[in-house]
Amino acid sequence: MTKTLRDMAVEVLRTADGREKTAISRKHAATWFSARKSGAQLPIGNCTPPDRPARPAQPELLDPRDVPRRRPGTPQGRAAILHAIAHIELNAVDLHWDLVARFPEIDMPVGFFDDWVKAADEESKHFNLICDCLEQLNSHYGAMAAHAGMWRAAEDTAHDILGRLAVVPMVLEARGLDVTPGMIQIFKQAREDKTVDALEVIYAEEVGHVAYGSKWFNFLCGRQGLDPQPVFLDLVRRYFHSPLKPPFNEEKRAQAGLPPDFYWPLTEPA
Image 1: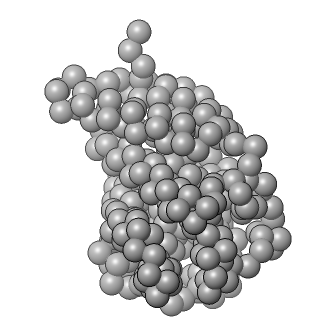
Image 2: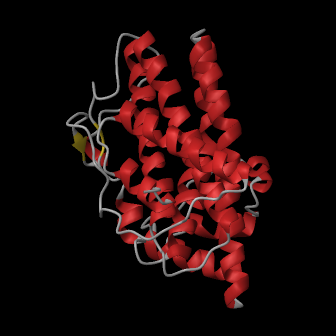
């Protein structure tokens, strides 16, 4: 029996080990795009995704306030930065597959699924690139504590596709565009060229993920006759729980379809 796309998404979400999860993710993405290319598109299907994705026993997940600060001046500090990035990338794999699996009541064009399967595939690649860099520093994913709040955005928006698009790609991933150039400089100064190369791949591809969020957010607003900018501000204030922090990478945000009036008003408390 042919697996549907949503069956594949749930399989990824129910896989705990990071390397195994990303291997299954990449395999399913390749299957989806191979079928699309041949003209034999797989059925989207229907399913009930888990409330939370499966997770490995390690890393220990802590309240964000309890995660130790990362100091980039030492190899241990740089390993801690990479561990945090790996954790973000693994959560992103699940967030994108969850977006594929969830909201079956909303009829979306096949291009929506193309975009988020591609994003999940790229996040899987990013996780493995960063894990390889961690191992080069004699560490591994799971060796340190990590942020427990990464899935909160998914839980808060499990019933609201516009909220999900606003908070995950258009706020959380857009934040990556702001901070990644500084991280690239840290590893350039340390002459860790493999990590620089990995971060530059991530930086280039994350622009596309933010752009997918912006595109489908605007698509759904247009379908409902809504003005996207005030709707976006309202949703972020409802679900994000804190002001946005400048400085912003305005060039890359614009490239991804995020104009300044979507984020500057959110720098002040609601």
